Image 1 (cartoon, helix red, strand yellow):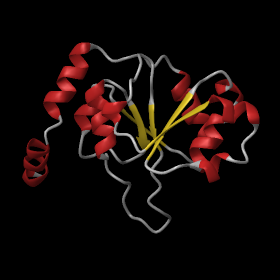
Image 2 (tube, rainbow, N blue to C red; image 1 turned 90 degrees about the vertical axis):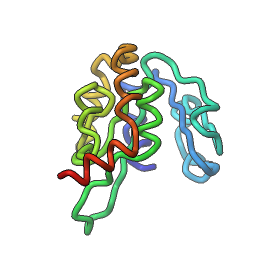
Image 3 (cartoon, rainbow, N blue to C red; image 1 turned 120 degrees about the horizontal axis):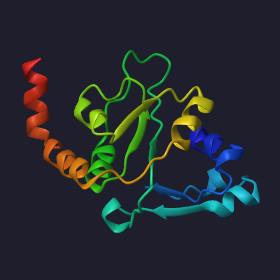
Length: 155
């Protein structure tokens, strides 16, 4: 959660509301935050994304850190795929979109280097708006595990 909180504390994001969707109560991580930052965070604990209303302009941050000894970036997770189907683009770890390059082309996934938060902030500051209906429909058509496995096995 450190990457997320470090990003949220950057001055350019001081007026942004933050939705934290987590399986368990993040109270211990949020207890020592400055009041201003803590007041901008809304927590949804133990809910699936089908129980949450997302809005135009929402952006999903998925700063996976596979560890220093990992030779591979974590691939696209199911929650990134779910968000794409809902029309919410995701920022994921650089190198993690190899299995879903079409979603990069559609603007549903952007790879970033989380160790450079200034560069990530510049990407976030771009005009992230809700993708077009066409991009969302194409994403839904593409996101099919059977098709994805077939693609991977043909490589």
